Image 1 (spheres, one colour):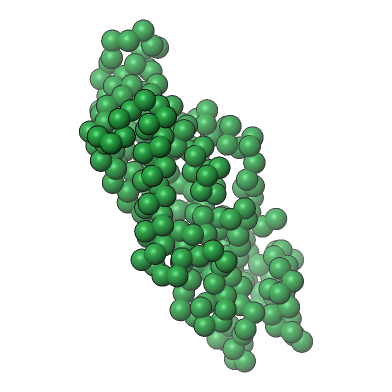
Image 2 (cartoon, one colour):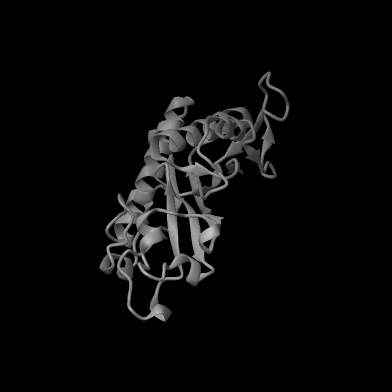
Length: 225
């Protein structure tokens, strides 16, 4: 497939074991845990880098006109914003509850920017210069890759310009440059205090729930500070 990051359990297990902490503002706790794990984190911030689910994205006006919206996309930037924020917030509340933290007492602030994406165009303008130069590829219900049309002569078939799009032929041999889609979101949780050990559990639980419940494709472990 196009993306170099496939959705597989081995990758998730690896990320679950590599939650990253910035403990500059922590203090030492008094439990029997490993000293590093017993440090206290107050009002944690979690930064995640990932490929977004289709429902957290929205199409351009041109994509809508050309019937090139991705199946399952939000109808507007506002709806995509709502989908992403609601999914992240509710998932974090569930994760807090699972690790024994009072989720109802927590205030969760999500800094999320919806992503604009479109499929390849099956309806193309006659003017070759006006044809799209990029599109996005969906894998496992997430927008995993961006395809840049580096060689239009290869991608746009001379007889049937949209042939490769219709055939779903997404390879570099057809003039495409394919890169991973990676976006970043910050989640700030206030009125919450816990040890590094607990926050690691929280990060693991949050990552797993977003991966398997919301089709989020993580590219690195969450960073918690």
